[in-house]
Image 1 (cartoon, rainbow, N blue to C red):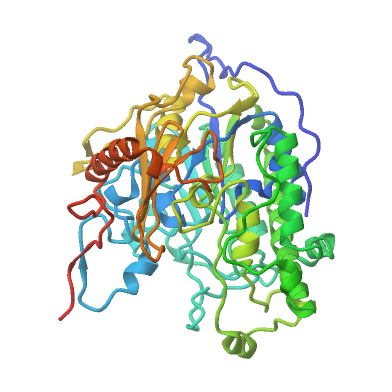
Image 2: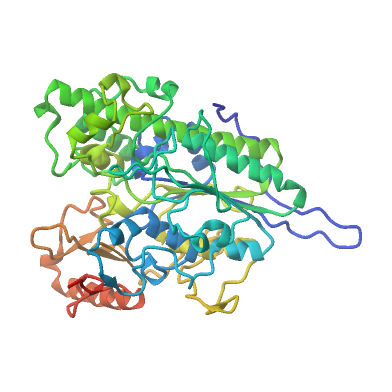
Length: 554
C-alpha cells in the first residue's frame, strides 16, 4: 500500500485554460469529500491521538480545522444531511432503516421517518452534475436499497457502493450477524462480485481513482465522494497495520485517555484547566479487569488503530494521485467523520464462538469479529462526552477540516457548523444556484444549511448568526445548541429530564447548570420546540421527543 509523498507547494490562483477568442475564466474547482465511518474526534494524531495519521495530519496542517463541526448522531441521517442540506427528519431519515425494520408489523410512522432518502430532495450530486461536474461515489451509501433510491439514480455518474450500513472488510459478508446474506455491492445498479484480495478501504480508493482517471478526457471538474466504511465494525485490518500497534494499548484505557487529553491541552484543543482525568462512564476500571480481559481489550483497540492508519494511508494514496496528475492544486478536500465512535458490543459470546475465530492471535483478521466497546469509544470521543447514537458532544462533534490553500488559509475555526452547511458551501464554490421548492417537476425541500465559503475565505466573520439555534434528535434523545449553551434530553436516563451545559466552560458536558438557570432552560426549550416544528421532529405537548409511530399494530 502506497504512502503519501511530501506534497508539492500549492499555487494561490486557479485559472482555466483560455480559448483563442475568449478571455480567461476561473476554472471550477474539483471537490473531494472524504467521510470516515465512526471515527472519534481524538483519533487523528493531530488531534491528540497516539494513532499514526501522517497524511490526514498534513492536510489538516495546511487546511482549516473546524473545531465546532457537527454531524448527526448516526450514519444514514448524516448522509441524508449531506445529500440534502437539511435536517434528516425533513427528508426521510428521522429514523434509520435498521430501526424501522425492528418496528412491529403493521406499524406506521409519520412522514420523514421512512428510513430512506426521500424523493423530496435535489441531491448534492444532482445539483453539481447540473453545474457541469462529473460525479463519483465509492463506498457506503446507506440511503436506500431500491433501484430508484440508489446513487446512480440520485445524481452520480459512477457509483461503486455498498448499499447497507456496513459489512465485513475482507469479504462480501453482510454485517447483519443473524443472517447469511451477502453484502450488497453495486456499480451503477449492477451487482459486483468482490475480488479475492478485497480490503474495503483499498478497494474504494482504487475505484475512485479509476473513475477520476476515466473521466479526465471530458475536461470537466469532478465531485468525488470517498465514503469509507473504516473504522466501522467489524474491526479488521491488514496484518502490516496490525503489527504496527502490537502492545501499544497494554496500559489500558485510562492511561491512553490521560495521554490524549494531555496532548490536546498542550495543543490548545481544550482549555488550559481542562481535567486530564477522563470521566469514563459505566465501565470498570482497568485495574479491576482480569489479565485475559485486559489482553482482549488492548488487542481490540490495536485493531481499531490499525484500521485508522490504513484509512490514512489510502487517503494519502488518493491525494498523491491527484498531485501526480496535476489535479490537487485545483481540488478542495473536505474531511469529516459521519458521527462519533461506536460504543456497541456483541453480547452473544456463544454465537461469536460458533461463527468466528476470535482467538487473541486472530484478532483483526478476516474471520474475526470485534467492536471497540464503550470504554475505548469514550477515549476516541475525547474531550467530548459519550459516543455515537447520543446527542451529547461525543455523538455529534466530529473531526473535520477543509483543505484548499488556493483560497482558504490554514488555521483553526471555532465557528459552529454542521453537515447541513456542506451542500450550500459546495454549490457556492461551484458557482451553482441553490434549489428552490421545485426540481425537475417535483416538489422538494429547499436546503436549510448556510454556506461557509465566505467565512472560510475571510470575507465574513461568522457562518451562522450567534443566536441561531441548531438541533438534533435520534430515537427520542435530543439536543439544541445556541451559542455556547446546549440543552440535552437523554432518553436513556432512568428518569429523563432536560440538562443545560455551557460548552465554553464545560466542553465535556459534565456540569449541568440548568437548576441554577431555570429562565435560560425555558428560553432554550422554547427554541427547541420551534426547531422541532421546523424540522418535522415528533414531540409531545410539552416539547419532549415523542414516538413517531402513528398507527400501532393491533
